[in-house]
Image (cartoon, rainbow, N blue to C red; front, side, top):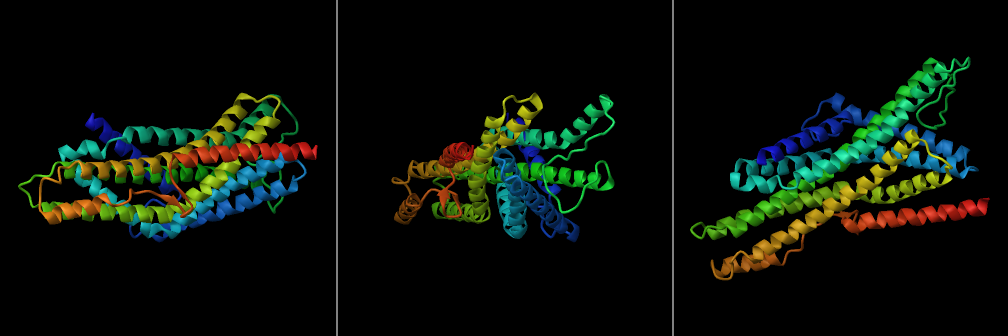
Length: 391
């Protein structure tokens, strides 16, 4: 069982590493210039595409369904640019957190008594991560292959005039001739951005849960160590190591909050909008084909799964932190050790549980998942009201 969990942990680590390397934001100490240029290029491309999509929305402001579609896609690519920008500016912080928790994790894996505690819940999170990747891939790949399938269908029907479409409904400041060089370049440009959306979403969102997975694993390790103190050991020295490690983990949570706080707050707001717009587009359809159904489910499902990963990770951190406090409380401290030792335990019991807040605005927990869905439904009914007034 332990070997299976270790193998799943290694697969999870390699997957997240691959996803983030694609956009140049995997934590690497002293990266080369080429690696530093990758995220800058990705940010630029996603900003250009999001502007083109917002131009499409403005051009079709009289049509509620087309306008909503442009806003939804434009917001998605603006979110990708924002995530890559945050990670690029926070490269040192991300690398620092990774180095600290990775070293702690390796120490725990080397101890047979602690190994299962460090690897606990890896399988569950890996499944969540892969579900997110599958849903995002369904949406991204559907957009990429739609023009190719459309061209193949036209050729099979031997149409004289082939209509060339692009994956995304964007208005560019240049004229695109059907089937020409500029069309092919634009197609590659949009496919690249869709791949950035796929790998950034899977990588950045999974990395948050990956870090929380490590931190909660070390909290369980601390709980085990405090409840298995050997009275023959120096209690003050053991307690000092406990406190030092807890303070380091607390600092990692604060750094993680600084980096991910704006990202999570942005996700809460934009995911509500995007889920709402997808619901609105579905309500406009009289019949939905299977390819479009896959696209819609992948696009909206990925936003729901994104929110759930952040919410469940935040809840897991608070839960394990409270469990650590309980372990300290039930560690038989009243009847052992010196007065100084017992006083130190009391001070530890007075500590607040660890938690992550989104830009000091809302605590990251399962409540934000419910809040996001409720907000999306409220926005949907608001859009329906506007549509009725417009008609």
